[in-house]
Image 1: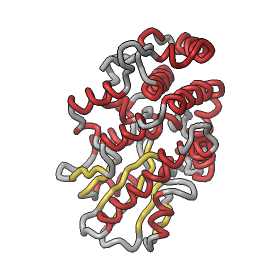
Image 2: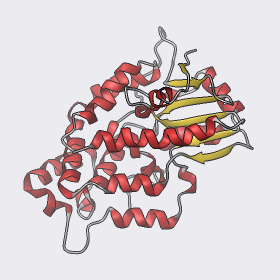
Image 3: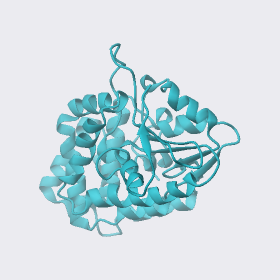
Image 4: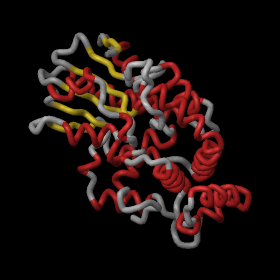
Length: 305
């Protein structure tokens, strides 16, 4: 699959953006001398084992590290690491399936479906990002949106190699097992499942989000790094709750949180120490995974240094 960025960014890295790409959850700020870093991190206190849940950043910069000591300690003891999906296990066949679902058939194009006004707005954004819009002509809206956001964050100095998941995989104990809470196919089904007009609305909302991207990034940076969970919920989930795309929040957050909670519950009944790593938007707010687990009888506490 052709991507719009340097070779550093593979299609696997593009797919890793799935949950957070729309939300633009990333850190651009330097650490404040007056606050202790406290990313969203939870401990399940009545599990059969030692289980922690970390809200992650799929893309990042070196400024996010080192992670706070409680997270590093949980990683060092983990026998199981549970991720949304394991990007290192994605196969060429799955990538081909993604490309096929994200490409219009012969005779159709994004330019034709978007119409002159939308295409003009998209062209203006491409110009700002130094992206050749002609390379997006055959992309379906959801894949075009992903690639535009990835281009923007790359321009801002972010990459998946500094994302939390990659950091966790590179620094995990050698014998640690990797468990997936979702599947590539399930995530792809959500992305590709929006009908054309909904997908176009998703693309246009993504484009509109670039109008104040610098301010949003600074707010999100501080909210994630310093553990301001209410701000994270407002900046991430509230935007989706108010989306023009029907059921966007339900499909992106609520339904997936219940699915991942099912998998986490199975792990809570095992004896091995476990570290769960999911996108930050899944661990804050009324419909968060911690709240889903609490409603099912599990006891959780927010961990801060």
